[in-house]
Image (tube, rainbow, N blue to C red; front, side, top):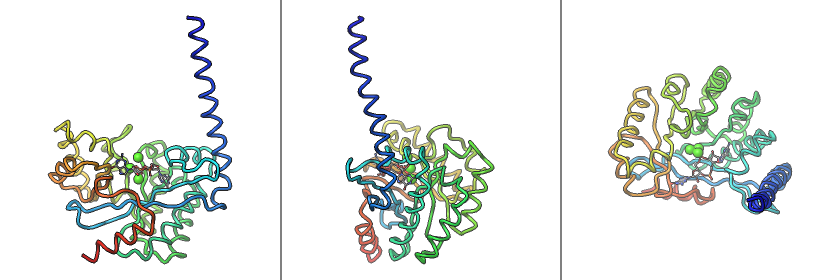
Length: 274
Ligand code: C2E
Ligand code: CA
Ligand code: CA
Ligand code: CA
């Protein structure tokens, strides 16, 4: 048992070291990444329930590092939040999204916002600057915020969301239904769109109760004047179930994967000509 214990330690320690070492390295690589042009955007189409019209594109950040190659946002966003670089990187995302999206036509551009960005005092001026330099009309920009952060500091969250809405930029409550979500979010915060988390969709085929839950959330959101999007639609069966609800939009690999910005622009133009 003693040997076994040591064996485990030997296997475990290097892995922990490697993980911490990789995090440290990524944090340090991240410092010059904007200047080196290592970031780019992908855009995933969001469709109306019929699947006919693209109503929006969600902008997703991509990082290809000179040493580590592609790093997923699930890995690097938390690091950027820890070392504070998320404010600069996230500001670049907003400016770049407005710049590339301006000429796409009548489609909403949805950009993810980190809680750190939401609480940063410079956010309104970053948004104003991005709108002014791109010429994008504010109604076409929508900022997605995940629910987990809001209740930590209700006052600050409300102030920030109001400031965004005053610029005529819309807000989405993202990943709804995960974590300690509560229906009170819907009445407490001024969101125009509610995005229902993928976990509900995964469950749709197995569990008929999920349809009822999703339907109830959608009904409530709509009564409160919010639009609803369901994310993570991967199968036709899931889409068929969702069509029985009256959600406004659907997003997922079944309908469209994240695309390079040029391809998204072309897809939107081609679709809107039909
Ligand atoms: P999210 O905001 O929930 O974005 C949706 C994620 O789900 C994306 O992953 C997308 O590629 C993936 N996805 C879309 N459809 C499907 C589907 O049908 N099935 C499955 N399994 N996945 C699907 P991605 O691009 O890896 O982004 C992961 C997360 O990283 C995002 O989750 C978001 O929280 C964060 N993120 C991405 N870009 C940014 C950004 O510019 N700023 C901030 N703060 N966070 C970002
Ligand atoms: Ca999102
Ligand atoms: Ca989401
Ligand atoms: Ca998510």
